[in-house]
Length: 390
Image (tube, rainbow, N blue to C red):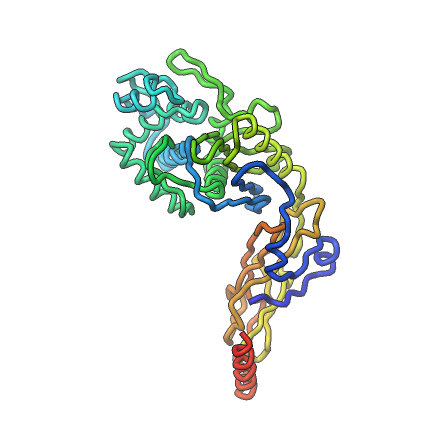
């Protein structure tokens, strides 16, 4: 049910928020156009969704899967299960499938040599090293298949319900999939949870076995504030990238796929990320303790209850095109009395164009006790009539 929200004049006037029907929201146009088949971008601080296009469509992860392998390694060291100085032996399997004989991206790990975990991390972050991924998988879990199973378990734990990994590298395999939304969320986690390891992703180059290779992320060479993540490509879904820009303390993170070539991938990623940085500003739309709206109450001493958030509600709103911003309070109602102050009621949802940008929980701002018998009877008759209309 949609609450009748009492938005302030500042919110309604200056910010251009309005309560609109769902059909209107679905018809709204995106504020940005991209050649990517799928794309998703967030503000790293608030999690506000700035752009979405086919964000939940399954795609082949290709080398983007290596971000999940890095998450597993970063987590192991952070938790104390592993150390950066732990060493792992290069098996013949890792050498053949991901090393020099494979013809794929590699750190050129020497057969039967021992490599520190930190160096393996850097080889993956900079060189997208398939051998590095397999060495970690075998060292952590005994086999790449076991490690992939643990990757999937970990993905579910951190809120990635769709992503499915069959190997540690992202090399083509039946059943392997992800989405640009989940890759963006994973990238955000790497930057937020592992500040001691995240800088590996910004290294311009890395040398191993006397071979120096430059970072495969094209955004790093553009001098635009890029400092991380990965690229990939698959026959099925084209060229893909997960990228980020950090300027003036503001960070945006995006993932996209379905680009025609590496040049188009670089250009489209740069345009989307720069647009995200310059086109939005943080705005407080409700102060702490300010009433956001109200919800209907059934059988209560009052017919409605006021709603508020836990604190101030901040949004990243477009600097231009604020008429594209819409908001609604969503809850299942009417709420049966009694309603306790602080009781969770629903969410305030904000759209930018046709993208659901932010969702904030709302709570009862007051207590509404059970009403008198005549009041409850009147509400019952009213609800019966509305129910027939529904």
